[in-house]
Amino acid sequence: MKEQLQALEKEALEKVDDATSLKELQDVRVAYLGKKGPITEVLRGMGKLSKEERPVIGELANKVRGNIADAIDSKKASIEAAELEKQLEEETIDVTLPGRPVPTGGPHLLTSIVEEIEDLFIGMGFEVSEGPEVETDYYNFEALNLPKGHPARDMQDSFYITEEILMRTHTSPVQARTMNAMEDKRPVKMICPGKVYRRDTDDATHSHQFTQIEGLYVDKNVRMSDLKGVLDRFAKQMFGQEREIRLRPSFFPFTEPSVEMDISCKVCNGEGCSVCKQTGWIEILGAGMVHPRVLEMAGYDPKVYSGFAFGMGPERIAMLKYGVDDIRHFYTNDMRFLKQYHQA
Ligand code: FA5
Image (cartoon, rainbow, N blue to C red; front, side, top):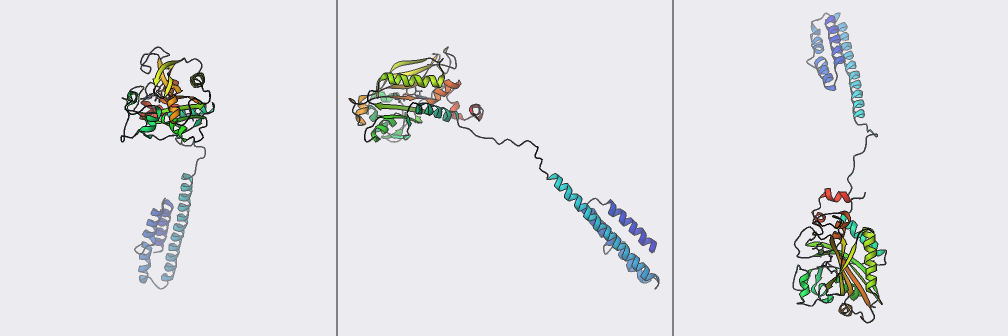
């Protein structure tokens, strides 16, 4: 029985030694020290032993059990330590790894161009104003010398909401609003950027919703040459000295005389393409001297005051500046297009 116990001890200690996980170790504990294990079995058969043998075998059995239990405990401690070590190693942060890039947004090309134009005019002493996109027939047309039934209303096909309310077709109503709001009828020098809406058919240069920037300068002795000077300076700063400009006589009911300004097409260098409709020129703004009727309706005495106004399309300006061949790119918001213009 003594040999049997010693053999059991040897066998159990070897298994403890071989165990590589807490689960294996627990299996060894159950197998050798459990109620149905061989040592308990030996102890159960003690009754058959002689009086002399009983204490010796009893002591040995307890010793063997103690040795196996100690071995299991110390192995358990070493497996736990190894597992902790492994976990710590796995959780170590490698500070030398390159960071994951965080995608950043940027202003839309149209926002950038509007801000660039604003800065340019602020530099010439203009203030930035705002007006509503849902406008009354009065401000959109009547206050601009376009009474009901005037044939020139057809120049701008409109989205009407009621008979008297419409989506503004241009930013010119802000001219009348600004002058009306000026109670002491002081000089006005403002620009107004904003969205406008027309029942135009979308094509490479037309959109049913687009942006305009209005300009208005009213003071004593404002002349056509002032308008030319401001537009010339704007065009040179925006497009560079090499672009050509031309002013064509035109007609707007709210300006007299009226002009349209074209810039030589940068996309084809004046040779003709889809952007300039094969003409080599692209129209970017309408302008003129504020009509005396418009000044009068807004409470300014046309014998004392004179002024100029202009309205430009920033989409067309961005198209020229960056060689964009279709106005619809501004609204379809394809990130591959927009990202080209992020300056970050
Ligand atoms: C006007 O809207 C006048 N209110 C401009 C004006 C203001 C004249 C002050 C005199 C004094 P016009 O319809 O031509 O004018 O439009 C002005 C500019 O807006 C055009 O030169 C063009 O650059 C742009 N534009 C016009 N229609 C569209 C469209 N459908 N899509 C994109 N841009 C357009």
